[in-house]
Length: 293
Image 1 (tube, rainbow, N blue to C red):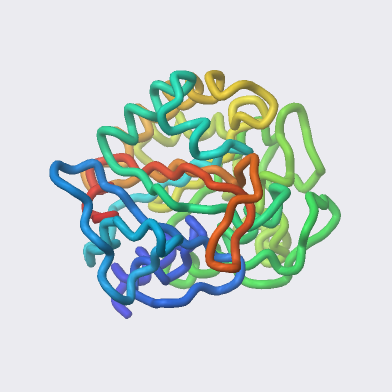
Image 2: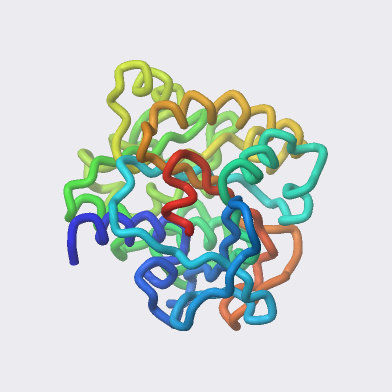
């Protein structure tokens, strides 16, 4: 597998799709998310070709995931506990809807389960690892996207809003919640000083943008208010309207940003694997349409 294809595989693993959508597999591993995609381009959407992953066969209008050139940078922002219909088309989220209209969005993505933590583990490890609660004393001894990134020498950082300091493993601090920081659950990360030091406070992001030192893979977990968990959708939308524009500029002309939600407010699902609610996922940036269609 070429370096570019490995990089894109890692990218979709971060969205819970592992290799299925990108590399043309026809099955999904437990804990992975399945999806179909709508790119914001002129003309009608086309039916996904055989072998591509579509979340719900009743809604097979999608654009195939394509492309072989690796994006220069990929960023993932994970929001909280909001159903697709409460974001897409909602007057409470004008910024998010503008992004979806300008770039691309995923119509049929479903979270794996409830509550939060198993979904974050599925996003970063391709499995829930048998965890079914928001435990803070539990851990995972398996490999994750971090191992993939390290093996392919792709630079990465995870930016956590209100995290007190790198390598912090406490249950919470202020509006920071460990259950929304999957990286520190992996013992291979938490016990490796070099790796856990790359899980940093979100305040580091603006400094990295100014210094032009952003890594190639960027994960962002807002705090309990800004991620829509404890505060209204409009609050999260305003937060993103401030965070996203400079991030998109810093990703460069070949970067792509994914904004997704850990779970919805319902038990909607598909494919016998997912029952965590129908969630929105938006791809933005110059490479969004190419990567998604």
